[in-house]
Structures are given as structure tokens and as C-alpha cells.
Length: 517
Image (cartoon, rainbow, N blue to C red; front, top):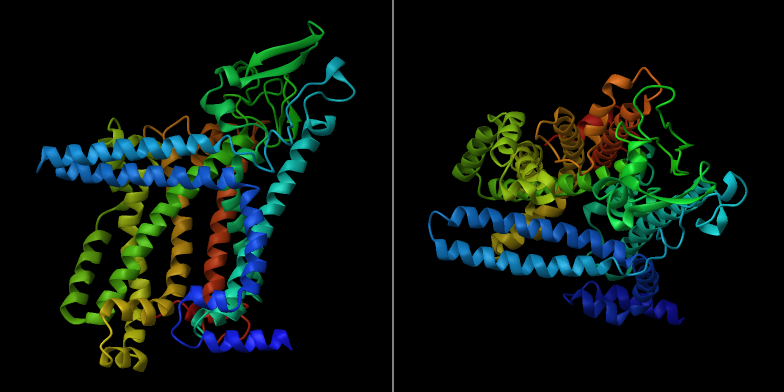
């Protein structure tokens, strides 16, 4: 009886004009039940979340303030200096916070489940690994736990949306409900969601997923904390060596006696799930580091592109006429500029500029990608925005005197959001391919070394595909194909879910109908 009363109270509350907080206070039990589990999930990996978030915030702050400073420098040296001073002080504060997150213990850390050690006498139990297991088993346990944690976190976030929809949302229905309900039965779209979640997992939890760290194996292999212990058969004792020296003697260069392939050890007892590169660095760790920078650059680019496209689409649909024509002319002008040529020019111009060092060149690439893809996204959502602008509820909102900004946000944006997600997911695949292509070409293009980039790994192994070191090019290439395919699958699933003529969202000929205007 009490449960029924609470449900009725929640239903009555969410139909009035109360705030979200007041609706939660009126019926707190579902929110507390979901929030308590979510709090535990966040706390056990708080260091990883904060580290990733602060890295993006710091890069965005330095990049945006740097662009503002460069624009103000010819106009006012004092204003430019003030911006630079603000940038340095704020960035230093954020950097200190980020460095502090490294000391926050996490449940699935390398320290809790170590996989690097040595085997006294060359046989028997290992020393220094988790439960004295062999490195492959210790690494596999940590990797499995990280993936399971990430999948459950994604599932619990979805459950949070269901709790919000059932108990706290003011509207009984929104277009998102039908989209998600159809996606729950769309296998191809679900495949894309799983691939996307795994890619996000690699970007966020990559340091814990690899058999070693990017800092130890790639960025600072000769620092004091990059020393490893191994069992030497020559001295019959435990020896210490820098990771860089071990890498030098663990190269995969195409010969049978100079190759460390997938799922093998090197001469220093280090396990390599994907083998090593031509410079001896661990390929799996390289892939995890490349996933993080690719995720950040792609996310910044898609965020900028969708923000511009969505905002301009609603403006052009709401005001029509001269405003629509002006935006159309601007979009045609941007499309006329070759994207690849612009990327090469920007990389060359800022090669020795400090702006080119932000995210190892990734920030400028993200800005260029965002500024060049918005016309394509705008064209894709302009039709749906024009349709929504002609609906009766928009006219009613105008007659009641609602401001244009409120009408666009409340009555137009929910109906074009699905189309934005469709084409943004497909554009993300193109950005990843372009980013990999730039890194493949090298010569100052793409992500600057030694920061990992998937395209550079493909370039390093392109001449070794037919030999024992085939893994260097094949594995990163296969990962790129899988990721882009998954993003396109996610976009296809969304397109089918938006299609009103699709009953199950299972694909087929109806797919083509969902993307139109």
C-alpha cells in the first residue's frame, strides 16, 4: 500500500512545474538506490576518472586561452598578457590536481594486481606477480576485471536513465523513449554500442589494461622508476635493467631470431599480448595509449562540430529566410576548403609553436576537424529541424511568448538530437581514419611522437607484414577497422530506431529512410 502511494505521489509531482530536486525529495528511494551503487562504482576508480577528466580540461583550457591570446596579441598586449597569466595560473593548478590523482588508490590498479615479476631459476612460481601467477594469467585477471567493470558501469548508467524516466522526468514521454526501446532490440546497433564502450574503456582505463605503462615503456624508459627486475641465466641471479635497454633487445624486425610475437615473452620475462614494435616497445601498451589520445581528439572534434551544427541548424530553421541563406553560404565556403590540405598546413605552420604541443598536436587537429565537419552535420539535421519548426507546438510556444532560445532548447533540440547522434557517430569514424592516416604519413603530421598513435604503428610494420613481425601492422589496422565499423553500426542502429516505419529496428531497406529530412 505504501509503495502504491509513493508511486502515485511521484506521478502527480512530475506533471507539475516543480524542479528535478523537488521531485527527487518527494520520492527519494529509487534515486538513492541507484545513486548508492553508482557512488561505489565511481569511488573504486576515482583516481582514473579524475585523471582522465583533468587531462581533457587542462588541454581544453590551454588550447582555448591560447587561441584567445594569439587573437588579442595584435590588438592589445596587456589583454594578451592577462590571458596568458590566467592560463598559466589555472593550468598549473589543474596540473597539480591531476598529479595528485595518481596517489588515489583504485581497486583495479597495477599495484593491486601486478603482472610484472621474475621467475627464480627459470622455473616454478613467479616472484612479484599477483598470487605468484605467471604474468599472462595475472594480466588476464586484471584485464577481465577492468572490462567487466566498464560494461557494468555502462549498464548502470543506462539503468539510471530508466530510473529518471520512470520516477523523476516531468514529461510522460519523449522521442528518446522510442529510440531507446527500438535500440534494445537492434542487434547490429548493440554491436556498435559494445564496440564504443570497449573503445571508451581503452581510453579511460588503458593504463590498468596494459601489461606495462606508457610512461615506463614508451615515454620515460630510462627514468629511475622504469627499472625492471628479471632472472638472468648468465649470472643465475636477479638483475635490474632499464625498460629502454630491455626494449632495445626485444625488437621485432622481421627475422625469426629478432621477433617477439603476440602472446610471448621477451628475454627479460616480460609478457607481450600483442608482441613488440620495431623499437621493442610493447604493442598492447602502445595501442592503449593510442586509444586515449584518439578518444580525446575525436571527442573534442565531435563535440565542437555537433555544437556548431546543432545550434546553426535550429537557428536556420527557426528564422529561415536570410539567416538560413547566410548559414548555407558559410557552410558551402567551409566545404570548399580541402580538409586534408588544411590539416597539413596547420600542422606545418604550428610545428614549432607551443599551440602545436597541446595534446601532442591533437588539440589543433581536433579544432580543425570540428570546424570542417560541422557543415556536413548541419546539412544532415537541417531538414529535421525545418520539419520540427513547422509543428503546432512550436507555433503554440511562440504565441505564448517563449523566447527563441527556450523554444529551440525545449521543443526543437530533442527532435534533432537523434539525427545529430547518427551522423556524429559516423563522422567520428572518419576522424579516426583521418587521424590514423596523418600519423601513418608522419613527417610532423598527426600526433607527435613518442605519444602513441595507431597510424604510426601501421607505418612501422608496413614492410614486415609478410614475415614473422606481421602483428605490428595487422593488429592496429584491424583495431581501426573494428572501431570504425562499430561506430557505423551504432549510427545505423540509431537511424533505424528513428525511422517511424521500422517496427523492430532490425535494419534492411528502412535504414535509408531514417537519415533523411
